[in-house]
Image (cartoon, rainbow over all chains, first blue to last red):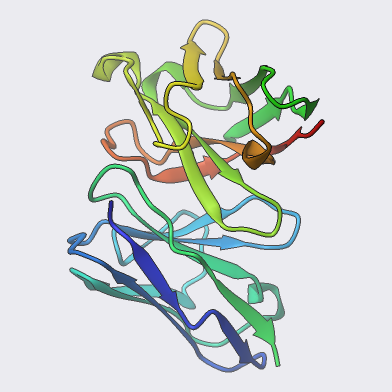
Length: 107
Length: 124
């Protein structure tokens, strides 16, 4: 089973700042990496799939990059509604495992 | 608009059974694979299981933690997916989300759309 490790566990930033979240896979997942956002009390929402493709309706300030084992989710300028937990997920191999999450909190 | 509505959650004793339903609308249900993902209180996301569309055989896959106890099925005529949970354990306590794959041709789940979730509490 592929293990995904997200870092940092918690990221404290202010609105307007740039956020960089990392996801590292225990073996190559090619470009089959997705990112999800979850706000308190809500279901997760797909943000990015196949490493760099934004899902429908996702603002351009969200971008994804990487391939193989190292991936990054970047939020170019944080809006108040972006403070949430972010999960990565690989769909290269069964099962489609999730990372443990990064909590993005307001500084 | 894609909508997924889960139902059937609640309090159940260890060892008992429960069946969750996911009623879908806003798309051609039979064209898509469906998954269940759960989240224990204060924890991360865990994929539970997956059922392919009939075009891809309608077969199922399960996480090791639930294999042999949980069964996913679908009724394409009613646009409903089911999660039958047997021999429930306290560690199955979680919010259970129904999800739809992003595209009809995904082979490993990509959770494009999510329901609001239903809470299952396993406790004596």
